[in-house]
Image (cartoon, rainbow, N blue to C red; front, side):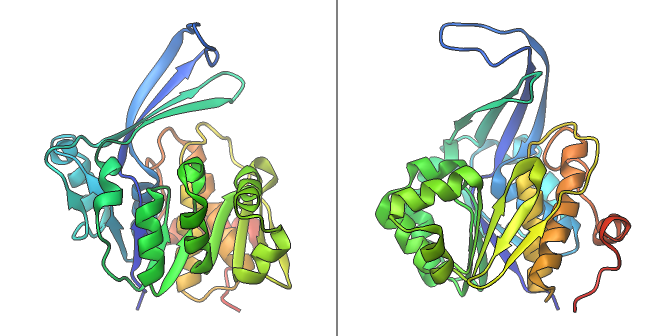
Length: 298
């Protein structure tokens, strides 16, 4: 039976805007297209896990427009457990405004809305939790009481205090970061990458088009990307984490977890929006085996 994966973080509406170029200060740039999509890092991961057939509960503050926006029905239809949501009627749902230009550069503006209340909320104990981008105060509280902790500070790392970051890392079993974030973690904590590897069992670093690498204290596993025609990078990292974590809870070896993550991520970048065409386990397995060979646990 699948282990329940609890995901903590943002539930947001994403407004994906195509522009000629990212405007500088006191400048404007033409908008060529825009779309609204369900998003938020935690919700993206929860939906991806559910689509893959895993058991997932979302722990996230949501606003009064959660139902009227259609997001609640969308998550229920996907099979995500919503029993641990914080429903705040005096708040609005979080919003992300994501601007992509012709050079594939991206700028994001985030309205915290209901998520701004995270620091005032008290978490309950969970078995296996993934701490996605969220408030560092809440994540530190959760890290101390969860049975198993996966942590991805993401773009919210700049809001973390050193104390909260160190509390979370001291309780983290798997750390996800990109090359910039892991450098920032080292700078904030004063710990070298070797020291981080000594204290955290598994560290996964993503390198964009170069794929990812999985580090343990003694081993390093390179994971290539699954080549597809990329249309929108939004949510690729979330899809990777969903595939990796579900594979991990199902007992797959670390290199295989990474390859499953890369395969799920390939579906996310093929379409607009982070949750648009996420695969079932069977679809993922077919693409995995076309690129990596037979999917096996040993």
